[in-house]
Every structure is written in structure tokens, then in C-alpha cells.
Length: 510
Image 1: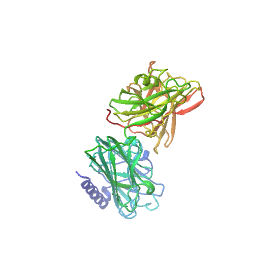
Image 2: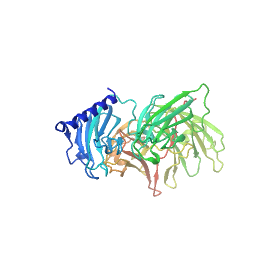
Image 3: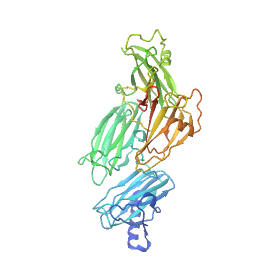
Image 4: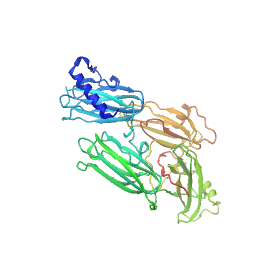
């Protein structure tokens, strides 16, 4: 059954109920918060009344399978209050603002089975007004964005030529989408406003490193926007944002990929990440380590080309990297792998250092860590041409209790408006093997907590072997916010943020 049909059924039910008040379910006060939400049945209209400007009305319902939720709010007096659909942890997955001239509005959202909430918002204009809420469901969810997709790591996958309907629901709501390109060609983006107010949100086409390739700002006057750019093998991201006009804007997004018969000249940063300076093993005061992070579920290969600061090629090394792993390599390992035999062969001239050109056949990250034994400090020195990653959904190489001089702390930030716990998968960084699952204490709404890595380790009952020095922590399920990692350099008496890392974009290795 189509949603057009569902909408007609919902409206017809509403009209019938309005004609017969005895047959209509009424809201039960107090229902001014999520915890007081009235339970309502799918398909059964509920009549409510907006009170004063502080009286929100909350309803909740449950779906038994993945599909589409449609919520319709009708107001016979032509002033319809604004309303939202929220998931069980407080994420707004669809919304519609106050309308002084529209009596009926329907919003849709693709959603898995679970409990959902409808919040009917109070306002000066809708106070004292009656309205009717009706919920409908469908087993199909194709063609709709899936929340949460507010950061690059949560991007919805797109298929070339297939339109998707989305909504920027608030001034802080961004929508991210991803298109994987398997050959050289052209990526074209079309975004058309479908809101009744005609405002088109801003749209950007970005590389996997987060670099803006093409963009069009939000517009009050141009209902559509088109972007186009040459593309090579890899992932491309589309960011849809409210910009200066706030939220509650619906849109239809279509992305096309067209292959070419001749290769596109690659950007210098399209498939190679360059990190410098990295110090040779004969550096007098510091020591370099390189971490390669495969954040995917499939093992892959990395290729590292070593050059000196004058551009001279010293050698190339390939290494298999397990899925979900983040192995750490001593600079001397790289030197040996490319045929440099310290201490004689590494450049001994003052100020000499290496540049690493890193490519991989998986999407991931690289991190350069610098150790100063005399100063008692361990820092990340990930200076790369693609810039530092903004992915805050996981952290790698968190120290186990084997590294006592540099204990790790993690910072969990709740970016939602409801208090929530965070569930993390704990993995062995070297192998990618799962060590356990850990759940935090309750994080206040819009708040943060700091947790010692030693506590996480103890809570899951993990006793590391002598070779297990690093853990990877990643959100499991819906992420309530962000995660960061810092270490305490006990000897130097300083704290160091270890979250930053460089992006590796999937490419075909020679």
C-alpha cells in the first residue's frame, strides 16, 4: 500500500472521528514529557488539545518490523502545531514546524522496529487549539533517508540514479550520504526542495578526506541545485545542511555517476596520504611509530613508500592489515622492510627526516606517533596533506595496563537532548579481534564523562598478554555523540590528545 493511500486513509479516519466524538480516543494529561507519553495504536486517531506555551503533548507507539513511519497531525481550525518523531534515545528523525495556514501535515521516516515518540509542540499561536494525531506504517522504507546520519561516519549509502527523500529537521541537523565509485568518471548531484516553504537547504560534494569539491548554499529563491565533479575510484560524500535558514526543509536528492573511457587525472591527495616529518631510527632525541587503522570489516593491504626530505626514493613496503585492526609499526621495521640498514644507511645529516606516502585498498586512517624518551612524552604528530580526520565514532590504540607510564583516558560526549549511556565494542588493536562490550554510566544530556581505559579493561574482565598493549573502542549501535582519547604523560606532567589521524582513501594498489 502506498503512503498516498495511507495518507488518504488517515485523513478519512480523522474526518470520521471528528464527526463522532464518542468514537475518538482522547489524550490523557499529564503527558508533557517523554516519560509521561500516552501510548497510542498505529492507525487509531487520537484527539488532543494544546495548552499554554509550556504544554507539549507526548505520545508513543511501537513498530514490530523495519519499514516507514508516517505521522499525520490535523487541526480543524487551520492552525496546526509543530510536531516531531523521535526515536527511543531522543534523536529527531522527522519533524514539521508550526503552520498558521495548513490544517494537515504528514511526515515520514525510515526506521527499524522499536518504540517511537511523537512530540506535539506548544506555541503562542496553537495554545488552546484541538488537533488529531494519526500514525501509519508501511513495510517498505526505500527512497527515504535513515537517521541518524548527522556525521560523515553515519552517511547513508546511495545508488547512482536512485532518488532519496530527506529532511533537514532543525538548525543543527545535517544529513550525510555516501556514493562509492569503482572507476574514473563524473559524479553529478541534484538536490530539489520539496518543502511547502520552498527553501532549499545547502548541499556539498566532498572527498573521503572531508575536502569540499563543489557546493551550493541554501536558497530562498532557487528550488534546485546541481553540482558536478570529476571522480576517481573511492568514496564521495554529500552533505546537506540547513545553513542560515534553519530546519524543517524537505528535499529530494539524486546522485549520478557516469564512467569515462579515459582516466581522470588524479588529485595529489585522491589516493595517497603523505605524512611528514617522520624521524629515522637514528634520530638522537625522538622515535617514530606509524599506526595503520583499518576501520572496515574486510582485511586489506597498505603500501608505504619512504622518501627522505629531499624527495629521494628509499623504498616501498606492502603489508596486510586485518579488519578492525590498528597495528603499530616501529620506524625501524619500515626501514628494514624497504632495505635501509641502520645505523649507517638512514641519512645522518642534521635535520634529516622521512616522508611516508601511504595508500591502501581499504578506507581507513594512518597516525604518526612520536616518543621522546628523555622528556617522558608521547604525542601524535599526524601532519598530512589530507588533514586530520573528523571521524569521532571510534578511537584506536588506547593503552592497556601494559603501558603504565602513559595511561589512556577516553572522553564520551552526549550530543543529544536526553541522558543516555554509550555502548562500545572493545577490540584488540593489533589483531582486530573483539575483546568484549562495555557500557558506560549515564551521560547527562549534552554532557560529557571521562573514563580511564583501565576501568574499561577491568569492567570487561580483560587481562592483556605481554603483546596486547592497545585497544580500539568504537560505538556499538546508535552513537549518542562522540568519543575522544587522550593520554597522561606522567613523566612530563602533561596531557596529550591522541584522537587526530590522517585519512586513507580506498584505492587500487599496483
